[in-house]
Image 1 (cartoon, rainbow, N blue to C red):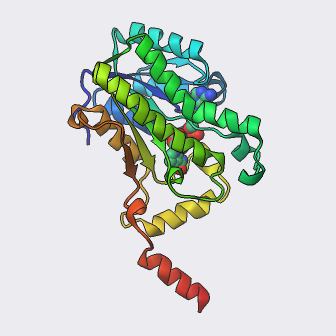
Image 2 (cartoon, rainbow, N blue to C red):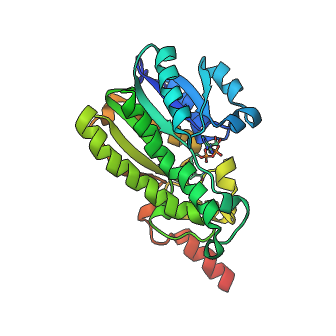
Length: 273
Ligand SMILES: NC(=O)c1ccc[n+]([C@@H]2O[C@H](COP(=O)([O-])OP(=O)(O)OC[C@H]3O[C@@H](n4cnc5c(N)ncnc54)[C@H](O)[C@@H]3O)[C@@H](O)[C@H]2O)c1
C-alpha cells in the first residue's frame, strides 16, 4: 500500500536485528514509501544479526553504534548526515534489552547493576540519541522521532520485570525532551506502545506466550503485528502527524481500553465448569 508518503525524507533506524524485528519491518515500509535511511545497531548485533541482508534490500548503509555510547552516537549523527547529504527528518529508536530478564532474575530480587544497564540501554539511550542529534543539529524542522514502548509502563505484567519501570522512564524522556526539541526546532517526539510481538526481545520475557495470547483474546481488533507497527511509524514520520508530540500512542488493537473480553470470560467459564 505504498503512497510515497516519505518521498524526499531521510532518517536513521535503530534496532533491526533480524526479519522479525519491528525495526526491520519499519525499514522496509519506510523505503517502500520513498524514504531514504541509514541503519544502525550495536556492534555485537551487527556481528550476530542479519542487518547486512536488510541493508541490501533497502539500499542503505550500516553504521555501528552502541546506544549507550555518546561517542558512537555523535559519530552516527555525523556519518548519517554525510551519507544522506544533509539533516535527517526521522529517527526510530527500537532498542530494548534487560540483563535481569535475560538471566531470569525475579523483579523482587533484582540485581541493581543489571537494572542500571537495562535503564541505560533501553531508556537513557533515547535521551542520548536526542542529545547527540541536538548537538549536531542533525534533525530538520518538523522532524519526527519515535521510540517503542509497552503497556507495562502503566500497568503491571509480572515477568516484564525491570523493563516495566524502564519503559515508564522512556515515555517520560519522550515527553520531557519533546518539550525542548519542539520549542527549539519543531521536532516531535512520541512513543508507540505496541502489542506483544513475536521478536527476539519480546519472546525473551518470561511468560511472553501467555501475554501474547491474552492480549490477542482481549483486544477487539486482535494484536497489532510488526508490519502494522511499521505502517504506523510511517504515518508518524510523514507530514500527516506534524502537530502530534510528547504522546504515548497505543498501537494495540484496543487492548489498553478493554477491561475484559467476552472471549476471556468464556474461556474462564469453560475452565471452571
Ligand atoms: N516484541 C514486543 O512484544 C514488543 C512490544 C512492545 C514494545 N517493544 C519494543 O520494541 C523495540 C524493538 O524490539 P523488538 O521487539 O523489535 O525486538 P528485537 O530484539 O528485534 O530488537 C531489539 C533491538 O535492540 C538492540 N539493542 C540492544 N542493545 C543495544 C545497544 N546497546 N545499542 C543499540 N542497540 C541495542 C538489539 O540489537 C535489537 O536490534 C524495543 O524497545 C522493545 O521493547 C517490543
